[in-house]
Amino acid sequence: MTAQETPQTLTDHEGSLLSLVHRLQPITAYKVAKFYQDSPVASVNKSMGQVYPMISRFSKDGLIEGHQVEDDARGTEVWRTTAKGEIALKAWLQEFKPLQLIPHDTLGTKVLSFGLLTHQERLDWVLEAKAELEKKQAELDAYHRKSDEPFQSFAHDNAVSILRARMDWLDRVLFDLVKSSSANQ
Image (cartoon, rainbow, N blue to C red; front, side, top):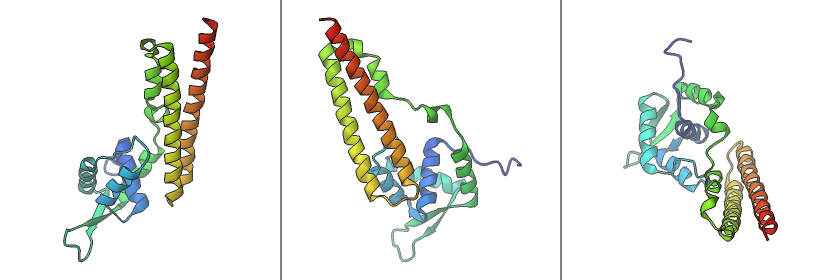
């Protein structure tokens, strides 16, 4: 493969956005931003102020191409991935980075500071975290029911499995907190 054939390296945010354009093409930048705003996943790029510049950069880099919608006074463009974009997207898809395997977990980091909380505050924190995870699972399930994207069931299963694993972990934390409280009495 020559330097000209080497696929452009995409960040995870870029790969996610280009993947979305590819899956839903033809699509407007507005619909991309709207899709992100409606997503229950916290890590997706939800800012319209970031979507439009990325679309523009992809166009300049030849990863996508746009065509104006006929009879649209606003000059709306619909976007499609190019062959170059598909090559870059495929390279991104087949690459595994350490941060993708074990992403940052703020809940785990917060637990490391439990020393600042009273025993009761720790118990309350765990119960509140579990309640928030249960709400997020309900949100994911509702989103999944209205989605007709191919392979959505795989992504949904992954997200729900992560939430359940976190809830199981919180159950173990709660059990240990209650057990340690009983042992100290």
